[in-house]
Image (cartoon, rainbow over all chains, first blue to last red; front, side, top):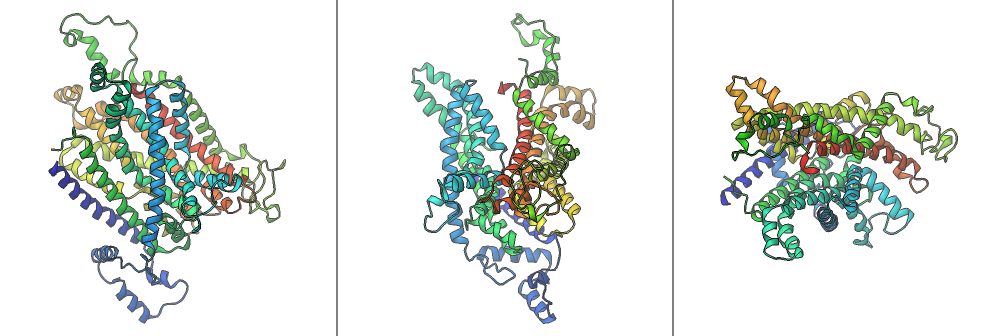
Length: 307
Length: 317
């Protein structure tokens, strides 16, 4: 176990450097003159150019600049080219995004897992077949369709939820975006639960438990459930990447100043440094979440013995 | 129901039944013709409603992409400010949007870019995934270790985020460039999941007895990969690529929605949704029509992929 944790941590560090380096390379792949981009249409004097070159280490070589970028990223010292502090609102933005993600994940787990269990227990029945088709439909709906339509139907037509995020009703106005975000992974969670639950129902230990005389409720609720949840947890970690893509759209549509919403705004305003910083931030969150999930996996499933 | 390995396993079990049933009493076998795995899958597929629905939608979308004027007489680029937000009429069944463009015609003509980018990216990522996954799975060892690390790094950068950063830097005026860049970026950053699938199928196929047998008979790496391992990889590969096609279409629409994908005068559902959203309080039709087109197309490919997976996987039945 210990060796596995160390190995996984080292792997995480490698992935972190690899991924941030990729993001950093992407940032420079387009080329262009960052100083001119900063100044917009205005001409830049030689003096200003020299000062800015100095300030942003533009004269150093590629790798040195990558290290500067990392250093600034971790010290929270990243200035956008316009001089605004990129990390100004990061704390509150993270909190907001965290709340939405929490609503989404609770929704996914409660509804998706429950539906999956019911479908697996009554496999081949009408509920199973119809929910399989229904979840397929849900998987097929992209966030840019779901978010505006939900906003239109629940916000404007039926007026059940606030149309946009407001400070006056911080919780109520986050429910709809959270549900939209949760719906995106709901269907996959349901199908995964169903498949894993069904596999476990056929396992030998279930037959043993049943022949011991345990009630059906205890067999399913304790024995099968615990073993079936392992893949769900892994899925939630991987799904976080998709959730973040969805969060950009959802937060943008509902006008929430979370990480995704600010990224959405920054893309619209063509604010390069902010885009890069938030993208890097999301990538880091993603890596850490995957690391935690993998470690959890090892704790939850003692069968997994790593060389 | 015969199982997935029929193609390879059946010769063994029919040729030497005694080897499997050492007690000398082979179970009574029906004397039916053994179907190949592909024929078996097709037999399953034919009876699956989800497959047909997916296929029909995908074919309609394909025809719409190749020949959009078949579905609408209107020119999508002919927009008049005077018709702004006009309701449905005989000339335009879903009315006009804020720019005064025909909503239905715009949606119909948007199919081409969507399918073009989706298919292009799926092909590109498919070729990459097949090559990389095959090499990693087949050769194993340090080759696999390096490739697996690269896949991990690539997986840590979500597709949409990478595409946002790269597309931001492109010039706004060259629409062809943006289109090809979208195909390239989605393909190059979207291959990882498929590569993992290929790699794991290769690894499980590689351990089969018939692969050792082929090697013993003197078959080279190339022949083993092509003749003996490839057929096992093909089904899961096809499934993941079909589903990826759907998600690439969704990704293109998302990027265009964000303003970093295709840009006007290109026609894209993402662009239509994005501009209709602003005026949805007045009329939601311009929002709903491209949304339905997009959702149905993505859905069609996901349904196809799902049906194929079910057909090839006996455990799902």
